[in-house]
Image: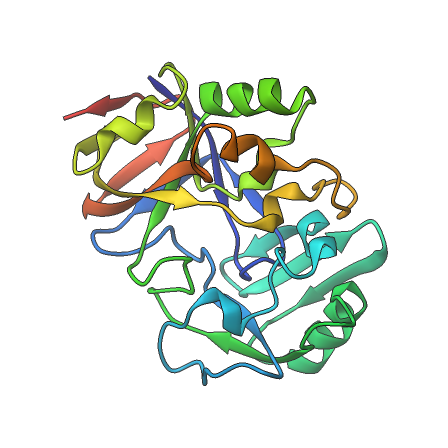
Length: 245
């Protein structure tokens, strides 16, 4: 099996960025992945600790967010966001709250709680799990979902960190509790990923177009991909081998 793509999402649900290589650190998520999150005005969170997805503006509630791409500068910690319906924006999320919120507001569903605060959670990040996780997705499983929907799908819909090929469709669900070696890092598979409406949105347009959840439910579940934790610090690059330990 081989690693084919690496992604991070510096601001949770607000833009994805492709990477060529990454250093994974024991007990942490991918560096800068979901480091920030935008809380809405009905949130029951203050940013001091991890909080569940329902506290934030996310793609399952506002599908337009799914079309955002990101370019992050680790030195200055500035991020450039792009969306087909908005002008490009470059901000430092810690200091440019007003600019960031003004930019994302037109992309939020007006019938939902509105973006109101920007939170940062160092190292831990606002991952979709109550533990610091890395998500892995299987190309063969993606192809299987395309067959179920009878439509091509962007892999970006799944918002995964690491993509791999060389395994059979859905084989990754058999790896619960197993350890994986990726490059020089070792991860432990923890959970299957239960999917939400975010995956029904086209990541080019930000409009819902394919019922991915209906397709998955024909298999008796609503899962795609797996969550893992980092057991051993190491480097991972596109083209590296992925193997069960």
